[in-house]
Amino acid sequence: MADGSSGLKPHWKFVRTSHKLPKYSIRHAFHGQGLSLDILNDRGTDSQTVYLARTGMFTGQFWSISRWDDGTFRLHNDFTEEDQHLAGTDDGEITMKEGDDLSQHWRFEQVLGADT
Image 1: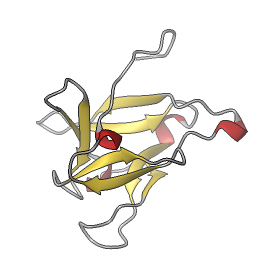
Image 2: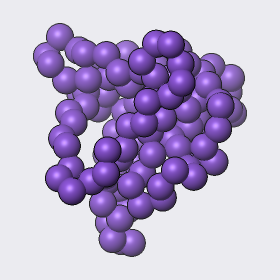
Image 3: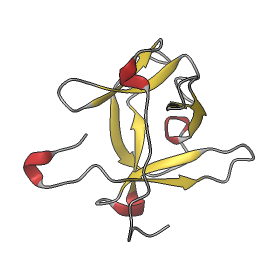
């Protein structure tokens, strides 16, 4: 999702949803409130295509964060459930992927000057 050719930086904002459990909507800083990270429903709960969709009350936009044993984090959503995690690809895109490999281990940094 990081598109270096257009000058977009990979700054993502995690917005707490109204769920009782901690769930987040993930939004790109450039696109604001209107678009959130979602899963294209092309294979049911086995879907892997991640894209920015209009923000709404969709299970593919409700993300949970949990910790791997090495201190990094994994992200999964209510649509594909806990078996698939957000993963980076060699070409700089993101996808959903089963299992546990380094492409699914995320670290977070606060961006100074970003609104909270």
